[in-house]
Amino acid sequence: MNEKIVIVPCSGIGKTYGTVSREAAYEVIEELRPESAQLVPLSMLVLGEENARAAVAASPAITIDGCKLACATKMVQESGGTIAQDFAVLDVFRRNRKLKPQGIAELNEGGQQLAHALAEEVAAVVDKLNGKVETGDEKLRSSAPCF
Amino acid sequence: MPNLPQKKVGIVACSGEEMAEGTVTRLAALKVLEELRPNETVTICLPLFLAGGEGDRAFARFYPTIAVDGCALRCAARATEQYSGKPAASVVVTDIVAERGIGPVAGLRRLNEAGQQAVAETAATVADLVDTLLDKKWSRREGRFLESEPVMQEEAVAKSAASCACGSGIPVQTVQVNGQQVTLIALPPLLAQFKQMGKRPSPETAAELLAQVKIYNDVPDAMESQYQEVLAQEYALFCAEGVAA
Image 1 (spheres, helix red, strand yellow):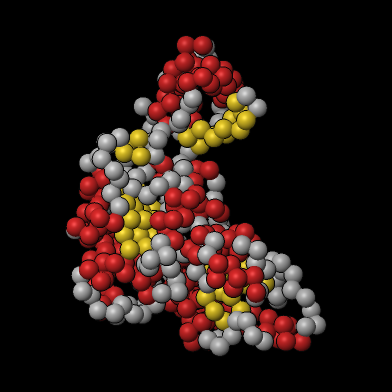
Image 2: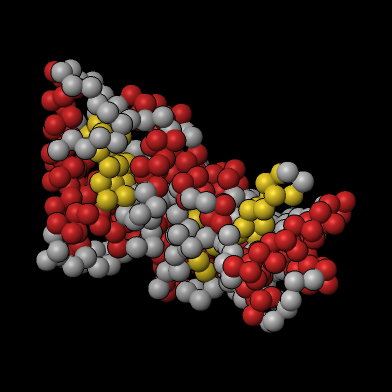
């Protein structure tokens, strides 16, 4: 497999979940799956920047949205990309209710743990997508959950 | 005047997640929004210009806006101008870093010392711009300053609890004028305010409504009668249903 899986997090700066989405994306591309995942910034997709559009066109994308407006998911779709899995931080929080994320500029312990839990889920999807892409036995469907 | 958001300055950060300077834009914008000028500023997520509605796209017309970009690509400034309105001012972190002799900025998730300094310098620059912009008279109808001097751009920069607008946007309503869809900024609160004031649907009320609508929207002189007719219909409907479409 040549192209890395694209991760597109929310770029929101006004809410904790936006920070959680970014922190999770960073953890995936820097620590968990640096060789098989890459981050594409939302702002470049908004601008229609050529390299960013090419990246989402060439590889399935995992989007991570911080709120119901789902900017990351919508922008990948607008840019002609294929969404392999769209994560919403709120859903991950519902699966990890004991964690209480707070903070925007800097996440508290609960926020960091939530980001880590999300990153693990994203990394699992990256692995699954790599397996699918390598064997070619199942075509990816737009917005279709992998699990 | 309708009960619309007071005059504030909009901050749009590029938030570029792929570079440390993008992190600087986020943290600098937050510092302005939460600490330095919390009562005078509001923000919106850049992607909402495309992913959101007409109210979101009206942001930079409604508020004089400062674009805060991490690099020379200037995604925030260019996309804001393309989809919403021309930013009143624009700052670029790499320019500030170079001008102030700040060392190499690094650390996507945890900024190094130079990055922290860049946050402080960028935030201070933006706060100064906020003060300057608030002193000028802004036309929400035209989306520009009324003074004759040109809007500040990079030259101005060389001299020198976050209010998040996500999901709220500017109140707008789309109506049909001569078979064309027209989005009118501020119409929903105007209708509500007129009803609250006890104004009955009438040609006089429609004329008053048109005068208010013209404060926030560009109504061609030749089309005023058509606009007034549409506003009369919308207000009658609003009074009958009590709900702005």
